[in-house]
Length: 412
Image (cartoon, rainbow, N blue to C red):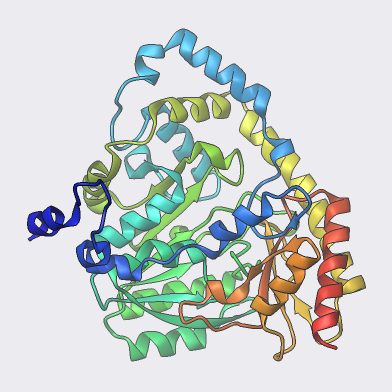
C-alpha cells in the first residue's frame, strides 16, 4: 500500500507532492501540540516576563557540580559511561533512588525501579502497556497536560473529577467509578498539583485508595514536586497505602535540572518486565552517562543541599507572587496558595476568556498558560496557570502588575 503512494509522490524535479495525511497512522490524529511548548517559543524573547513554562530557575543550576561529576566519570569510568547499558537503569543509581524513596516510606527496591527519559516517558510507557482505544482514564479536573499528550495516541476516554482545596472530591470520584465500571486507572498528582498547586489531604488519599480497591482499578501517582515543600508536613504517599496496585513516578527535572531528561518509575516486580520490554522498543535504555552523573551528585550529597537551596528561593518567589496578586488583580479573581511546587492556579470572572487575555498580556510583554489546556474536554476558559520558579522576584512583581493591568482592561 505504501510503496505505490510514495512512487506517485516524487516528481523528477525533486518536489514532494505526497498527501502525507493519507500515510499517517490514524492515531496521529489524536496528537496535539503542547500549548506550553508553543508558548515557550514566544517567551524566549528577552523582554517577555514568562509565567508560562514549568521551568526551574536556571541561575540556580549546580553547574560547577555537574562539571566536576562529568570530569570524574570520564576520568574513572569512561568505558562504562559511554557504553550501552541495561534497560532497567544504572544499578548504583537504582540503589540510591530506592534508599532515597524509602525515607519517604515508598516501598521501593532496586528491582522495582525503572530509569526513564524524564517522567514523561514513564507516562507514555503506562499508556503503551495498559491503554487501548476507548479505555477510561480517571483524572482530576484540571490535570497535567503532559499526561493527556502522552496518552491521547492510545485513544482513551477521560472522565474528570472536580477538585477543591483538599484535592479530588472523592464523592465525585466514586460517582465516576460507579458510572465507569471498566475504568483502567486513576491518575493523581498528590503534591502541589500541576496545574492547580493543590495538595491532596491525608483523608482524601485514604479515600482514593479505598475506592481504588473497591472498584478494582490501579493508581498512577505522579510526584515530580514532592521534595519542593515550603511549609507543612509531608503526607504519606498513596503508593505506601496501596503498594501492590500503585505506580509511582518522579523525576530529577524539578530538583536537579530538566535538561538531563532523567526520571523514574516504581512498579511491582510482577509487571516490571512489561515496562522493560516496552522501553526496549522505544530507546533501548536511558543515557548511561547521564545516570552516572546523577548517581555521583547524589552520592556526594549535592542533590540534598541543592533541594534545600531551591526550596528557599521558590518559597520567596511564591510569596512575592501572592502579594502581587493581592495588589494588582481585580475583585472576583481567586487563586490557590500552594505549600510547595512551582505553580498556582487562577480563576477569573466567567466573562473572561484566557485566550483573549493572553493576547492582551503579550502586548504587555508577559505570558502565562491558559487553563483550558489542562482540561481534556477544553473547559476552564476563565482559568490560567502561573509559574513562579523561573522569574526573579522583581520580575514577578512587574509581570503580575502588567497582567493585572491587562485583566482590568478586559473587565472594562
